[in-house]
Image (cartoon, rainbow, N blue to C red; front, side, top):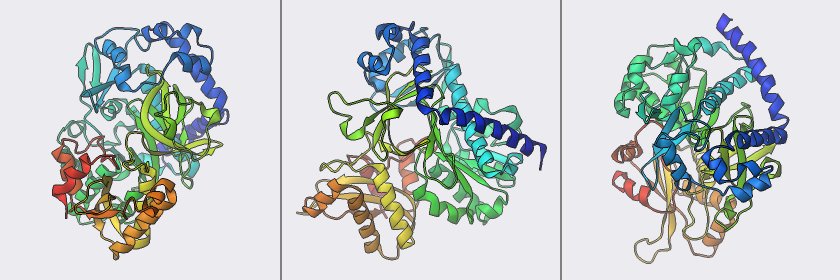
Length: 498
């Protein structure tokens, strides 16, 4: 065992003990985070405007601080962007994570010195937790890659800005610098296809042990490696041991990945965002991710089916229930207050608190009142793939409200197959029945002849990547929208039908 591997195991054991302390005292941990956040921000402009001086409890907080999304918080953020101090958090942020906004162009998410430390530590701890659980630390001596955005940062009124993954690249610890790939110059390439091709050249003869990124973009990297080398990834990188991913559900990609790799490798799921790092997978043989309760984030939860009510109930960690679809609301040490992240989650364990990401509150299909969510379509797809021997590269789902002729409306599944099912009719039946079992509203619509059975539209090979490129969102942190209540994505894919 190398000195680096031994040191990693010792450090991992120490972090595991620290994790256990807050994990086993979740409510007290969150209460401490809540009071610390409110106390630190009470003299900021936001704190003064919302009476933080008089907030002593969560009930006080709910009365004084309404739920906001980015658009509602934007007047405060704009003042921060202009260079003003003490607006949302004491002083100024040290970064803005620049992301794409849906209605107002670019979004500037503030990142403070404390919040970036929590982000970096959470990412580190996810790997250390894996080492402590499995006893495997051999991979730390090999090469590691994270497919990410450019680390080159711009500046706005004295505050650096860029993509979160690019910002994070500046925080790779010194002891990993020699292990990290690709080179800084390659990481700075903006065009995604050029960048991946260059990464392939830089890495194919290296001893890669850890590979990380959004599954759809790692898949593109693997396919290019296989095409150039003529080998499975597991043969090319004989010591490849760990795949780290986040951003989308991995399950629909798993069969495809195992085919590309040629063997099974351990994986760690992460739940990071520009607004914070929320959870990571803490057990190889269990579903779900451990919700991080001591990382400068106070969580509130609203039932998704009540979220658009006039005054939905906001609860804390102590009152959540298993298997309920919640919108996650966050208040952070970067100055986001009762902020609607847009993600929906479900708790699959309360001891400890473990979650799965079930979708986006804006990403659902309810054109007919069915309120189908991402978790449901992903589980249906996984079942259909497993039972028919199919393999997929990507898919999305949209309603078809006005089909030609006098047909009933339906859900259209646009699927790029790696390997088509031997029996397409059975594949469609499994999808539809699974969705009916998961969603009683969808069942009622099918049973009542309001909707007809879903339809599958095959997309040609490379069609999804071509579509993403056509809208300027190929690579980086961009992800294909899994489902939508309109046909914007679906209609954009029409020209890529098989």
